[in-house]
Length: 163
Length: 124
Length: 92
Image 1: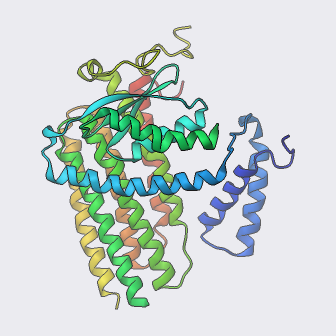
Image 2: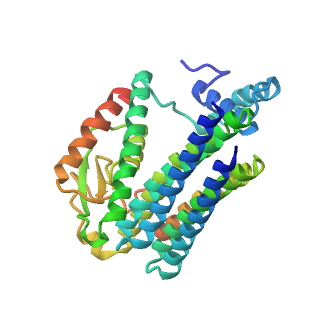
Image 3: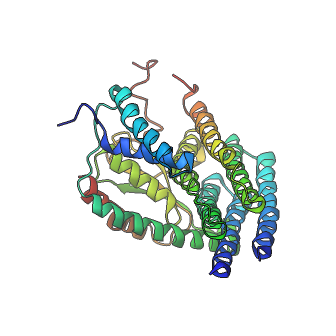
């Protein structure tokens, strides 16, 4: 059931929070105007958002964010070490194909974004049917380990959250 | 307390600067585009992240003036950096024949960049 | 006792400027147009960092909007350039 006043409650909250953050001011005036925008903007743009993304397990999202934040820090130190102390031509760079079990566009988008931000990997392309991701590794001794890490560490959690 | 927060801000500024510098160094040093792509997308986001946290803490702790709009820039950059890297990689795959030759096969269909675009009005 | 932070800002400004020069080197050398796009993208990130550090150094928040605009315009130009290379068109 979608309500007619609040077609996208999460979008409303995001718009209100972004307004308050832009004003950089926690006063009543900016809060009230943020809430007005949060109700108004989703109402007037409702026809551009026909569907609402489904988030089944919001709490797993927090765990996922913590895991990804930790991995971003670790991967940055790792990539910095590779850049500073290795000659570029000795890095074993290669492309690997990661088969996907995720099907919803939101989940695939979050997964490819995560792949780019974490250890030595950049997502380079999706297959035309959306069932595999092309991943470029900066320095991979074992391509299968990269695929396994992506699947167990990120994809499993995203499957819990979105599907 | 004031000294501790100042030390924290100083360390965060230096850490952020280090990662920004390493990102740009990687961009200049690494030998080919796909390897170069790794350096800026990762190092610069953490570099900017650390600098923005430093700026936030500096206003909040040292100056006692509530400031949180830095979060917006950080969130924006963390959302857009993977997208820019992805489109650059896609354009590289389309334009560079030696890279195309090294691609592994996808599971069931071809890679989206190299397949004809289904929504393309010129090909319908 | 803000000498420590000021010194850190000075170090940061110098290091980020050198980083921007490295980006300019990549922008000039290329070899491909995509290397130049990537260099410009990184240059924008460095510019944002410079603005944030100078904001801390001078103790004002008035440069914040400039940093936000840089982030948005930088992302849009990168995507528009790449879209043009991918599809031969920006808006279809």
